[in-house]
Image (cartoon, one colour):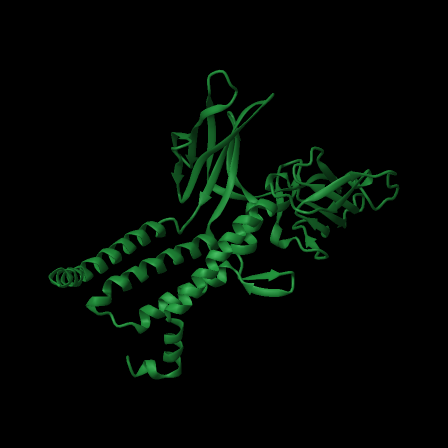
Amino acid sequence: MAASLQSKPGQALRFLARPALFFYALIWLMGLLIIGTVTQKYIGLYLAQKTYFSSFIIWIGGAVPVPGGYMIMTLIFINLLSKLIVERWTKQKIGTLITHCGALLLLLGGLLTASFSSEGSMVIDEGGTVNYVEDYHRNELALTNTADGSTTVFPQKQLQIGQALKVPGLDIAITPEMLCEHCLITQRDVLLSNDKTHGMLVANEMRDAPLSPEENQNIPGIVFTISGTSASDGRYGIFENMPIEQHINVGDKKYIVALRRERTILPFDIKLIKFEKQIYPGTDKPRAFQSEVILKDGDLQWHSLISMNNPLRYKGYTFYQSSFIENEHGAATVLAVVKNIGAIFPYIASITLCIGLLAHLFIRLPKLKIKTGRKATR
């Protein structure tokens, strides 16, 4: 082992295992934490996280690249892993090396969470049943047949400007012209009078606008052209939660085109039986609220009560009581839904870190007692 570490790969491992790399990476990470926290006030939590922490490169002024959160965490992971490879597992170092293993498990769990976890919401009307989760950040373009309810969906990653989207089963194409994370919609002074523009774009103009720090105030939108329908060919514009549905005709069939939150279909259904809330006396502010639901998975079903401190867990999904909606149509519950395959890693990593620190303490304790005794006899 010692001979192999004298080779060039071995020397590279020793360099990557240097404590100085970990020290400076940690300082840079602390700087990112401060800058990201301050910036979040001006650009919002999600955009700050995406810019500073969930990125490999940060572009300062759009021209100067500096390491982002992902790159620094990758460097720390490589540093700790290299340390485990080059160090000899002796009795004196066993506690420190176990602690390194705990830190590696924590970083590995973070990698799995960042790569494969999903977060979204589920809105269920009282008495209604839902089997999908809507993503917080991504959108999709949906084409729904009004006759049978069948839907063709194009996820956000497929929506590229100038790239035609072929609709399966139909000889038509949808080509995005403009995509905006936050659209500003203004009324035109003069209505457009041509055969190439349809829907809301006849009376309104849609353009890209700066993102709001409050993410729920941003209005995603898309401008696109449709070809192949003959009667409905032309240019359209829609935005999320548009109050008036956009219809197109393809032969003798009618379709609804909508921009909505990207949906993940669940392998089970959840029905809201009853929603209850408690308010503070003398006010209209809710003190607590809960949802009585029935989860149906094939022939299997059971009742469950979801409250603010009592989530429902099933098949890797966790349902938290998040909020509620009340209007003239009745009440609806809003559940926050999380799927995180790396959720167990922080617990395993914490136990490993604890074992490593305790082992290091017990190994060093006799030496500390001897040193203390020598000082006392002087």
